[in-house]
Amino acid sequence: MEAPLLLLLLAAVRVDAYRPVIIVHGIFDGPKQFRTLSAFITEAHPGTEVTVIDLYDNLSSLKPLWTQVQHFRRAASTVMEAAPDGVHLLCFSQGGLICRALLATTPDHNVHTFISLSSPQAGQYGGQRSCDVQGLSRSEGELTRLCPSTDTDYLNRVFPECVKKTVYYFCYRRLGQRVSICDYWNDPHHRSSYLQNNVFLPLLNGDRPHEDMTAWRENFLRIQRLVLIGGPDDGVITPWQSSHFGFYDSSELVVEMRKQEFYRNDTFGLRTLDARGAVSVCIWPEVKHVQWHSNHSVFSSCMEKWLT
Image (cartoon, rainbow, N blue to C red; front, side):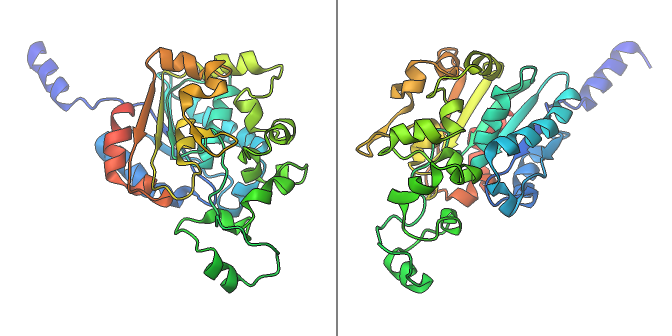
């Protein structure tokens, strides 16, 4: 067979090599919830190696986030080491915060694209029943009648009463900081207590100065692209704009990403990424929190082109 013909045949059957994709699940989740998303990826990009890390599943996802970060980092590093051209990191809900901490604390990571899928990157304030019912002795039936819950009202599994305004009493204590949700509970009415007592998100966002800030910023900036996905009908992430680094001020008015103090001060590199044109924001309506990873329209419009 002549060499030119052989080259043509090889080109015709060549399969593009895609970077491996690492998926990190959210709270009360596990690998089985991501079978559909994994299938979307391999159908769009045949041959892609997709790894859904099987750690801290279901109730174990309530463990402290720094503990989880340590083990997710170890598992992700194994995939990274076998991928000389880099990997993509796709992280859902609470997993998005785990992944950002993983990136910040891994100096030699080779993550190309970090996709944050409906993750409370600027914190969480709400997401459970929003009415204010005093007393902790009401029956579940009465609470349901007084405080109708959403379909994806998972925070009620941890905070079963209508206590949004008082969660900080628990979360901003040593015991509370041993529960993952409290690590990113950001009460806009108790900012000083949040900054002083929350051991996770204020450090990650650079809201509380620490000796590793410069190194964490440099590590985070190793990524080539940040994709932020969320939408107004999520029903859990509160405010939903937290998935795009927006958050409440003390009047519970949403302040968008570019007006946030951590953005203006570029404490962890977000403004630098944005200036590079490396931040992509995808807003998708009519998607509930538990539907993000099984919605093909979201995948094809917000994720597919970045997973090459």
